[in-house]
Image (cartoon, rainbow, N blue to C red):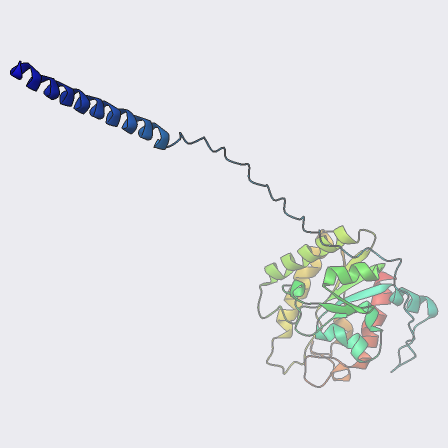
Length: 270
């Protein structure tokens, strides 16, 4: 009986241990389930906002005006005189060019509103410059659009002859004439010859100027544009600039020369 009694407490103790182990296992399983991380939900990419750029406004080009009203006085000067009809023709012109061309308004011969010219301009570089017309400042094409002349007379080249070949000079002129015609299809376009220089000038030679003039005359006339010879009337017997028309530096010209130029203009396009 003593042996049997000793075995019963041992059995009870074993059962208690087994139950405790089972309880511990159950508790751990429950805790594990409660703390298990949730399966992450798929995060859907949100569509990014498509930013539509604000459209850049297109450049507003000047619209051809009904033509700027210009009053031409042109009193008689140094033996030159102009009729009313000749003055009207000149008032319908726009002169585009360099410092020589700008003398038309510098000397007070014509109003600035029809003289699109500044110093150092060449046909190769005309797009690099702006011109004051009718209270505004424009590139050459826009200035001509504002003026809307019946006749456009390009008068430059002195700043080109020592930099570009005669062939390139002609190509540059034809490009400008083409663009001007596209902008102002109703205007008649002309190129004026480069004016002569004093025979003693070291700037260039009159033979070279004559070659460029001959080349551009042929090029523009073949392309359907006009050419105005303003050089012949300014030459002396040797082919250089007549001292009567010299502005003093052997290259630029004086007021009398501008009257001579306008006289050639009305004769050749009138």
